[in-house]
Structures are given as C-alpha cells and as structure tokens.
Amino acid sequence: MSHLPGAPSPSPSPSPPPGWSAPQAPQAVLRSPVGLSKAVMILLGLVIVTDAFAVWQGNHWYQLSGRLLQDIGSVTSREISAADTLYRASGIMQDAASVATAVLFVVWFHRTRVNAEVFAPDGHEKKRGWAIWGWLVPVVNLWFPRRIALDIWDASADRNSRSTALLNWWWALWVANLLVGRVAGRFYARAEGLREIRGAIAGLMASDLVDIAAAVLAAFFVLRLTRMQHEKALRGPGSAA
Image (tube, rainbow, N blue to C red; front, side, top):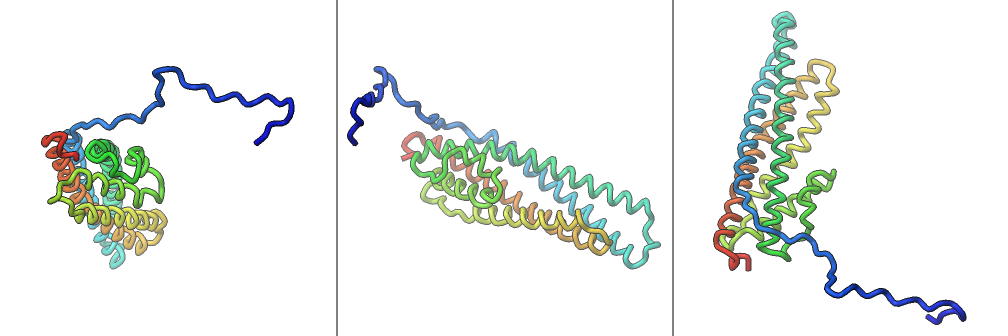
C-alpha cells in the first residue's frame, strides 16, 4: 500500500538482541506417580467405606419410613431423630472423603499427564492444563478428562496393554453416578411427604452403590496406569520412542 505524501514511513520492527530467544513452554519432566497413587487408592478406599456406611444408614431410614407408613405408632420420635441424624452424618462423611480424594486424584492425574508428554510429546489432543481444568469446568468435565486419560493411557502403554476397557467402564460409572446422584439429591432436598422422602432415599442408595463400583474401578485404573508409567520409566529413554 502506498503512503500519503508527507506521512512518515513506518519504522521496521526492532530486531531482538543477540542471544535472545522466545520463552518456551515448561518442559515436561518425568516424575514418579507411585507415591501419589498409593495415597489416592487409600482415599478411594475411604470413599468406599463412607458410601457403604451411607447405604447402611439409608436402608435403615428406608425401613423405618416403611414402618411409619404402615403404623405410625410403631416408631418413636427418638428412633426417627437418631436415624435422621446418622443419615445426615453419613452424607457429611461422604462429602469430606470425596473432596479429599478428588483433590489428590487431580494432582496424580496431572502428574501422569506430564509424564505421558515425556513418553509421547506429540500424542496429546489437549494441553496439560486441561488435566486440571477439565475436571472443574461444568459440562466440559463430562468428556474432557476421559479424552485426556485416553491420551495418557496410549502414551504410557506398551503394545500389549492398549485395551481401554477399564478406563471406559470407570468413566461410564463415574458419569452415571454424577447424574443419578444430582437428581436423587434434588429429590431428597425437595421431598416433603414421607413417601417422597422414602423414594429419594432409594435413589440416593442407588447412587451410592454406583459410586462404590466407580471407586473400585478408579482404584484399578490408578494402579494400572501408575504401573505402566513406572515400568516404562524403568526401561529407559528408548521406551518413549
């Protein structure tokens, strides 16, 4: 494009000083996920215990409400108060165990994602930051973590360990529990009559059972992926090719 008469010519962009280079993204560094994986599996065990306790207390409340519907005089106010208190306490314990497990699981998950980048630098669809944010962003968290997990699995596995059935079953149960738990929780919060409360408790117990199954598969997933990365790291740099 020609310049207007009298207008100053644009000055050329300044060249960078000698020896200067553009900042690079942090390099992936291989770090052992073994210690983190052990802690995660311990917390997953705690999740299973609190879920089982919630199912037990939920079943007690469910049976008690059935007796109330049949004969209101067969249940004392003290029994009702005790059942309600214990069921609410089981929910608090579940929440505490779930939050602690989720935090440590995401830390472990991010570490395995960085390790996978060492094994296969070009084998990842999402940037490593999504290994954290993918769990936190609503709606996105329904499929981003699975996509990242698949890339981590492929980068960490050898030719005999590429089956992703374990990962897929764990993810399916996790999403199912997320959806069923939210629906049942809303029903329980809005329930007014005894029949509504009883139905909501049945839904919550179903969600807890699904969560137990998901936690068991999550523990196997953590164990298997950690073992694959540990063994690949022990084989040395040639294994990353």
